[in-house]
Structure formats: C-alpha cells, structure tokens
Amino acid sequence: RPVFTMSSDARDPNAPKKPLTALDFYAQAARRKEDAAKDVTADDTQTQASSELYELEFNNLSDAEKATWYKLARRDKIRYKKEMATYEPPVDSPSGCRLLLMGRFFPFDSEGIPFADTTLTIKEAQNSSHIGEDGGTGLNVWDGAQLLLRYIEKVPNIVKNKRVIELGSGCGIVGVAAAICGCKEVIMTDLAYALPLMRENVDINRVAWKDTDVVVSCKECDWFQPPPVDELLGHYDSKADVLLVADCVWLSSLIAPLLRTLKLYTTESTDVFITYQQRGKEAHDLFMEGIHNLFDVVDVDTLKEADLAKPDVFHLLHCKRKVS
Image (cartoon, rainbow, N blue to C red; front, side):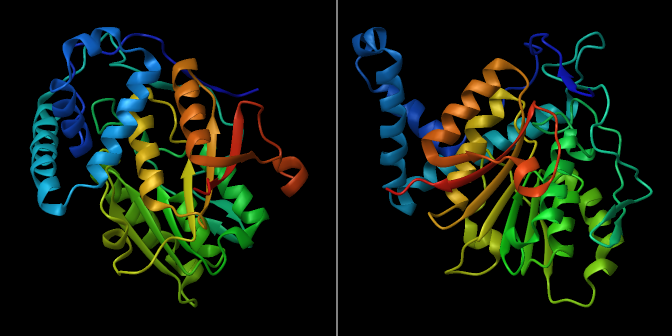
C-alpha cells in the first residue's frame, strides 16, 4: 500500500524561529507579570487554563490596545522572512520534518485527470525545504487533496451554491474542483510563495466553469497572522458556508495556528471538511485534541457514504463548531 513517511531527524537548531502572533506577544508579556513561584509550581492544566485566559483577555482588548501587539507581530514576520531568505539548511539534514513521497494511492497525471465529466489539469513544481513555514509542500499535489477532490466529485452538494474558503490550497486542485461542482464562490488561500502556481492552475481550468457565475479568487493567508474574514471575503456581514482543508496536518508547529484560523473563519453553521493523514504521533495527538475541543467531529466513512476507497491512514473529518 502506497504511503507517505516523515523523517524523524530533529529540526535544525540554526533555522530561523517561527514568527509570533499578536496573541503570542500578549501572552508572553502577561506571563512575565506572573509570580515566579506560580510559574515553578504550575502544572499542565494550569498552563492550559492560563493560555485560554490570555486568549480571552486579548480578544476583549480594544482595537487601540491590540495595535501594539499586532505591530510586534508584523515586525517579527518581517524578521522571519528576511532570515528565511538567507537561510540554507544543512546539506545532510532534512531541516526538520520533510515528507518523503513513497507512492500515490490516487492516480495523478499533471497532463490531466478525469473529474466530473471534464478533465482537470494541475501543474506542480519542485518544492524546497527552505520555502515557507510548510517546507514548500504547497507546490505539489498530495493524496489528501485527491481524497477531498474525489469526495466533492461524489457528493457535490457539500459545495454546490455555497461560499467556500479553502485553507492551504497549494496547487489549487481542491478549490478548482469546488468551482467545477457549482459553488457560489471559492476563496483559495495559502502562503505567498504558492499563489503564482495556484493562479496559473485556476486559469488553466477556468474553461470548466466559464458558463457559470462562480467567483474564484486566490489570496494570501498566513495562519500565524490570518486576515480578518471580512477582508478575506471582500465584503462585510458575510461568512463562509463551507471551509475545506486538505492534508495540511503534518508539522506540529503549524497545528496551533491552523486551529486558531479555523476558529476565526467558522461559525456554528459552517461545515468544515478536513482530509487528514496520520503521520507522527506528536502532530496527531495535538491535532486530534485541538480539533475535538473546538468542533463536533465525524470521521466520515467514505466507502459507505460515497463508494470511495482510501488507505486506513487517511481520514475525512466533517466538523461543526461546538454550540456554546
């Protein structure tokens, strides 16, 4: 059975540190004010409670009060990008966690794959471990994306006539599929380095929905500092009906930012569909704990619901925000 594996080598200690969010800076400052004795005696439960309290306090700040922390976050993001521009990982090191492609479960051909009575043509590019927070994986089509693609093909009503946001769109194959299957609007997002290839793939496939009113856009969204939902959608008093995430869970350092972004962009009425491949234990445990804290989660039986076979290591999760 074709699978993906992930190297277990430790992250390069000389690699640039990930940028902190405004909430991170606020929490750091709040912690420094705490009694040192409490820091020494605090257990994991207290630490988790403190983190939740900091987030609540931060959310209740005025825009003027938040401005200081957002300014620090912007500076740190600039610092990170400058350091990454000159960073070269060791030749004999995978620079953290690099995915090794051992084979595909779902057939893929960059010249075109059949989809919903048409042909999808999706270009890939060579990734590089020093590109972006995700190691440049957004330049390739992964099996998790193809699983979500095929599920949308089998059950198009999950996106039909809906406003859709996709996180970590990469090459754009899932967002293009949503457009072909009749969504009202799809906003595909990823880090800046992935946008040129994503837009090229949108243009290549635009003929498949040229006679419809679907609106397709490609926008930058950094989970460490995601844009407000109204800025992403381009209009106020609106929300996404559906949020899609295809195989974006593999680096532990990205899970907390992803979960915060999911919380920011969803309401209790939003349907969230996540394809997920279990890899390392740390990332798996962090993700499963976090997603179940925020959402009611159903692990979809794709074979029963859509006659869609998949490897056991792949999951398709249907999530709805918990009712508060």
